[in-house]
Length: 173
Image (cartoon, rainbow, N blue to C red; front, side):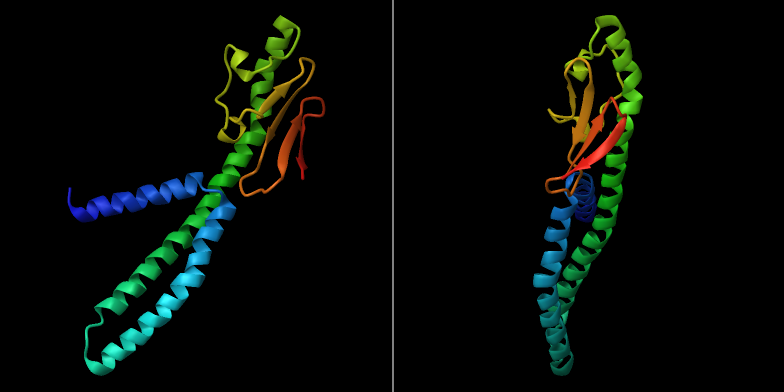
């Protein structure tokens, strides 16, 4: 494997990790912030260096390297933000669809035991749990009713709550 293949693999891996795992708000802060506060001044310096190199006949290598680096980071961020948004919206949709998919399993458990399970792990079979509902407060039950709860990606204090009685989701702030 040559050096450029390794670099490309690392960039693709970093991109996938950022898109899949990073919180959208954090991505915007850590992506757009450096572009504005570091990339813009660096680009201005690179343009001045480039124009100076053209006038004096010196090497333009440093200016081109700076501009290339800023452009590459800009492309990375420009592609990561909408991709991250799409992935996070899909995660929210999967979490909201889960109660309808797991309800037959919960009802079957209630028919056998008389109450809903305290944990989804008590179900003998169930659909795979979406990543937003995998936290310790994703599923709750008092035996008579059950609920699901998750924080949406990028939400500061908001939570989505599902109630088994009304079979609806409510956004709490």
